[in-house]
Picture 1 (spheres, rainbow, N blue to C red):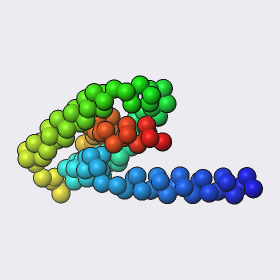
Picture 2 (tube, helix red, strand yellow):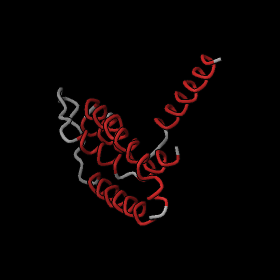
Picture 3 (cartoon, rainbow, N blue to C red):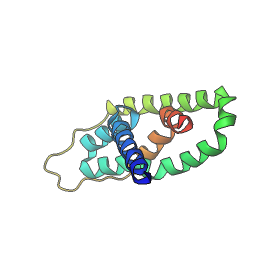
Picture 4 (cartoon, one colour):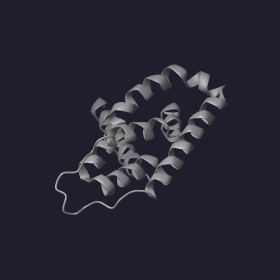
Length: 132
């Protein structure tokens, strides 16, 4: 009986992970942007950001879920910061140089940092972990 429960919970977790992983959003947009402008390595570093940011967000959501529910200004502030960051990223896209196809090594400097910022300023991440 316990193995059936474990298997069904594992299947549900895998399905949720796949769905959340491919859902369009700011982080996926950033991964695509970094991959196209700086190469696969930069895109992979950007995609790795949730591995490092979601753990602390889970702990914060466990400790502060009740308080945040009574403070709508906190979620509004995160949303506003995220909107400003996305606007900045969008404006930067107009000044990007196309990648040089002859260049063999792409510089991934800053891609992980941009991925972390994108994930931390995304209100969907907070809402997801607070609701779970």
